[in-house]
Image 1 (cartoon, one colour):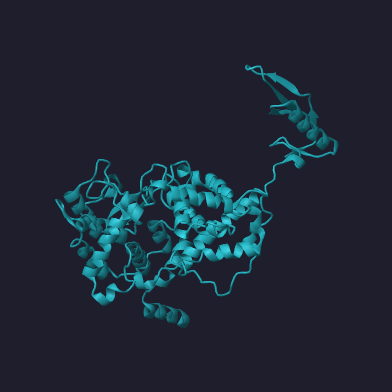
Image 2 (image 1 turned 135 degrees about the horizontal axis):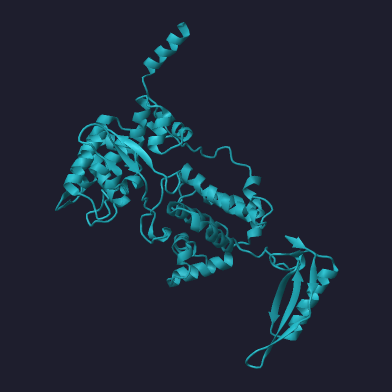
Length: 460
């Protein structure tokens, strides 16, 4: 807010314990006392004179800073790197760990592109390591740095362009181009480029919100017509049928190192089965507990999905653990969902509990050392299981290439079985519109039967 209700008071002399004096310039702004203290009388007189001249010119004073417009700190000198730190400090507390990781990934990609051509530029790998490992994560900015990292960040501080320069298309376009290139110089996937571009756009939008930029410069650029299109739909080629899913779940039990309780894959069979038969995300299956399971001796059971434990990295979680502990995706912090599960999964889970039990907290799935199952660990088991379940020519295809594809297969099965989209969305933790958009290519029902229905309707 601005106000012209200003009264300049006389300078106050402060006597300090060491017999030195300080001088405080005092004024009232809209009835609120403001002040600034100086070491000498001359500095205080000069500052008070500037305030008086602003009042005489009829300038409005800013009620937050207490200063007239002519004495407000200039923002043109704010560098891109300094503003990025400010943005992350604002964004970090409310962001999930995976979102934090995504933010630092995008900003570590674009920040080196927004630098002046100064001598001594570090190589790209070092700049990225310095940004992601030390500078961008708020908690690691004060940690000791290796000499090469410290020198790289010193260069970056000097070379980082002023934020105001980003209003120029000649600066913004190379930055956008940098977001489309991988570390090895090849083109990045369209989904990766889009995600990083969204982060960059939001940072610039925050600068507009703070009135550090007059407009978002990305909006002024003409988008190239040959820009890669991004598909959010599941590729039908990754979706296994029920027979293939069962072959994979059996193959899992034959792979992995052997411990006192059997092979690692045997401990993960029920984990993968939850992703296929219940449509759970990996993070949701990771945090599944005995209290969440209703496993009757016969018939259908159910799972109450309450929390998710996605892997994010220690520097991105508030707890300092590799796995985040958060509520369900697209739901409130304490909101849960109930997923009915078929007798086949009930039997698998009962067998798992009988053989492996749970940890002290009741968690079903854990590593051989009792910790949270890591993504890298179950991915290795899955890769090995595919080579056991599929012939070589099929292993080379995208079919069930990732554990997450089991969820895709399970949700696709429900839709093709004729389960209403509203019920499928509730089981899978999706909204209906996103569900139908993502699984549009997997709706592979009996076309002849559907054609017959249409023909019957036309003949009626």
